Amino acid sequence: MARSLVGMRIREQRRALKMRQADLARRVGISPSYMNLIERNKRGIAGGLLRRIGEELGLSIEVLTGTAEQRLETDLIDLARDPERGDPAMDPATAGEFIGRFPGWARALARLSRRERAARAEAAALSDRLTHDPFLSQAVHAMLTDIAALRSTAGILTDVPDIDRLDRDRFQGNISALAERLAETGSALAGYFDETDTPADRQSGVDMMEDFISTGDAHFEFAEQLGTRLAPDIAARSAPDRPGDRLLQSSASRKWAQARAHIHKLYLAELQDPGTNAEGIADPAPRHPSITDLLLDRATDAALVPMDEFQVMLAQANWDLPTLCRAHDGEIGLVFRRLTALPGYRFGYLRTDASGRTRSRLGALDQLPRHYDAACPLWAVHRARVKPFQPIFQRVQFPEGIERVFIAMADPDTAESHQISADPANMPDPFLSRVINSDRPRPVGATCQLCAHADCPQRREPPVVDLAVSSLQSG
Image (cartoon, rainbow, N blue to C red; front, side, top):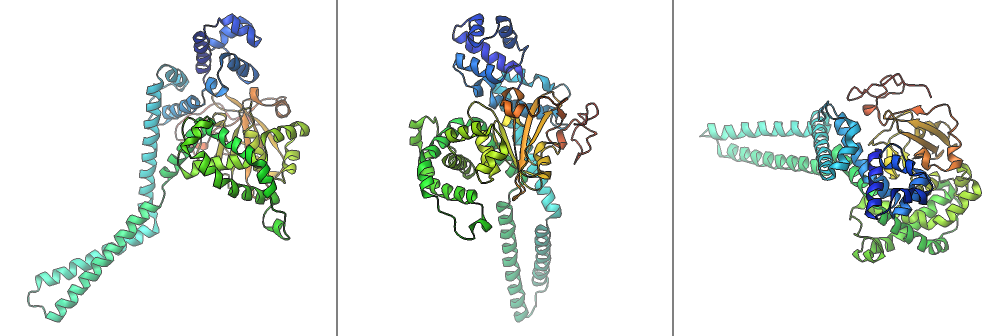
């Protein structure tokens, strides 16, 4: 996130509390000159120092760092770099300043950009479908054939006045049959377009989900509390293994499915009921199946692995991921999702399938660059498949200079890969020590279409605009 927004929030909140800059610096244990640099956007800030400042100012890390604004900044940068919608005079480096000065205009512009992008994607998808879809090709050919036969038959009835009565009845029967068949084909076409999602539909769904993930902290916390409250009941309900069960599904996977089914009944009633406002949620969760599933998953994770117990296990295992995963019957995804929910840390979570396509993103989404389908092939989440169940630690740097630490593991049974990522300043020492001594971070991109490393040997497709930087360093 641009430093200008974090420094600006610190300065504005300090002034609102009528607190002197020197007093705030003393309380958080830094010099007044360093605090001055932070507020003037001359120094970055993260980790423990950011938490201490937030505590003194009464603001959460999410508010200080502006997760929603970070997502907004990414949208505006994507717009500036788009060859068709952007403009050479739009400097991506000024996106943070624009948001800070004109937040309403920035949100409106990003919203229009998303909708226009979705409309273009839908138009392209429909055009491709009209050109290549075999069902449409056959349906249109059938309609044209029936229309030609209908016109020919109607022409005979119109142009031949003394046609035999039996022939006239037969021709009229043909017209009726052709009209009925045309109506059926037209209905099938309409239903086909109504029922088939376009990439734009899927993309808008991703936008909706990620908007909720970025702003729905209260709902996630409520789901966490609900799962923790139900943990004893879930443990008592766990069915013992039966002969042959492990051939079909791991014990942990089966328990998770059983717990989810039980929680589902109570969850929908409690979380979606506007009366849950009394629990501290300003508004009920959006009534969308995908968001309901997302929150239900969080409640199930919390019921099976309560956060207090998970933190004790973390300390006992000294943050060793294979040990943690073995303690949970090899359920890598469950362990990584609980890491993402850890209080005090800001992990972004990514899950990919065997083909490398993104299946889900959770947590602090600003810790991962924006992408929809397939992430950069140089990321640890892809390398992890080569050595299943072995954690891959990777220090990376994006073209704009942002550094991240990636940690990934692949499931040997499902071939899915799981990855968490965070700013090095907010990474726990047992993880950070695995990468901090590396010579230099590995240069990576977000996705091939928006990658500045033109000479990357792993590139899958050309960039949509020339963003080339110096030759890709080997990492």
